[in-house]
Length: 510
Image (cartoon, rainbow, N blue to C red; front, side, top):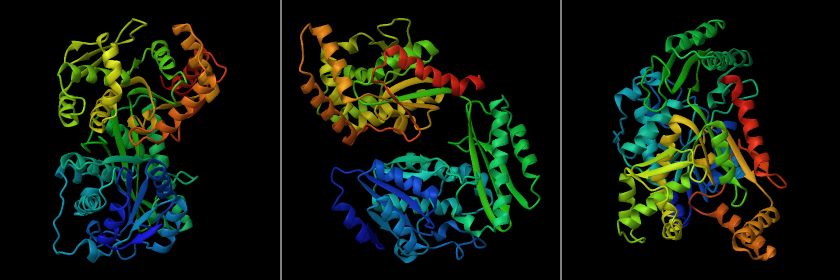
């Protein structure tokens, strides 16, 4: 691990390693705790190079806030980063980042900074937006990581990225809690043991509201009232706000239709703490990942049919755009023109009673369900799917389908990248030997000839290695996925295992 305090040094270090590598950025103010560790571990796992920035940003502190008291422990933080596999730490001075005064500021939409924390911390989110923009420009990462505990910040950063067309993927890190339920925060260091015990009322009040939500309560005033009533039981905790907003737009909600962010801020003694919970009413999403030959496609189709879910056929989406490109007579090497074509395309996936084609596919209004299975499309779909611009566009479309819920989808990175918030994540796997036997039987049944098992094993292992190391959509098991080893199991047995997990998790909520 290397520590840099200047922009010039950091840029030079990154530029020497950037080519054909993924770069993850995790911006922090230091005083790293277990919540930070989770984010760093994930970033290290998902990127070739990880940059952790440690900078207590004065622009996001008000005149009466804790800028001077905010905990600073650079040496300890660097030791943690090194243990977790971070390659680069960036800890600049204020003068290094803000050479000119006043500095150019980035101002988020008024609507997004006038609710929740913004109404009590004037200038805070302008400071956040400014430093995040600077760090993204300095590092130019592939991916940047932000915590869900700072939900308002996360929403503003996502809007910032979208509105300024900054080419970076934002990944959210779930709230990490102590065993007691208290959300980890660098400011927890300020709490006395008694105050720490009182602070538990924050998470407990949110849990209470979540129980009522799961029983059918959707009205904002009722949910907010449940939280406030619970908070009044701790007289030493002063409530600053309890609000229910949309997690993306931050618009206040009167009723939860699909999803809501229930957020609170309280003072425990002199320490200000925040916490939140996402309340989502969509039908569940089942994300199924795993290596080639583990039976994902067949299993996913049968699960969709048995549970009356939409089979989100991502492979068909790539085939549809391949068909569109070929019909438009665009060269397969002309990625910019292909990107423009795909960004304007409208793909429709429609459930069908046909076992052969359980999902009908339309692109720009034309039914291409059968046309996309042609040998010509099959021969070219891999080249189209390998294009970063195409994958980015289709992932956005897949995620829009996910907003509605009620889908089951399979792939390599569904649970980690496409639907990281899927309600049920499954990782189907099988030994190389088992997959080779299945492939050999399939080949014998269709081609009426034998194939060398040892050669098949070698090819499958090589495919696994390529899929796990590929820069675009690598094969990954989500940390919260349930692994099912399909060795010795029939397709129906695997399907029943997944359905059983689904029913165990959701039958009590339906």
